[in-house]
Length: 101
Image (cartoon, rainbow, N blue to C red; front, side, top):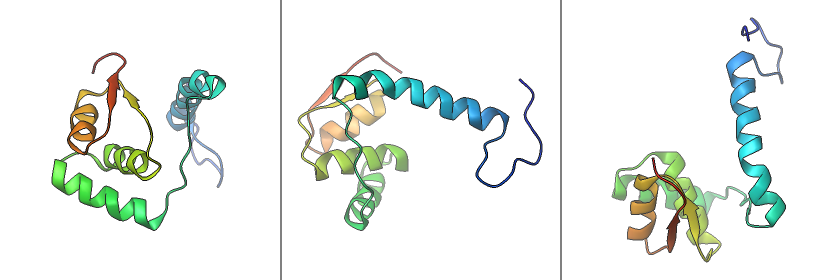
């Protein structure tokens, strides 16, 4: 697929649209099974995630998942990312690996 040039505001061009489509497919099954929880990004979670990122030397996206999970006191964080799993475990979360990256 050729990326469209000059996408209008509110539109995604080429590879960005493909990436979003892939992400939506990835969340369909857990959402259908009721095992996906979307957590609003509050200032508290954002502040906590910055602390986690600095303390654990992880990407901000991973720190947001870790802090969000801790904030809502999730039972288990499922991930295929070993670095995220290590950081979340070190933050006191129960983690289940579902594959491996």
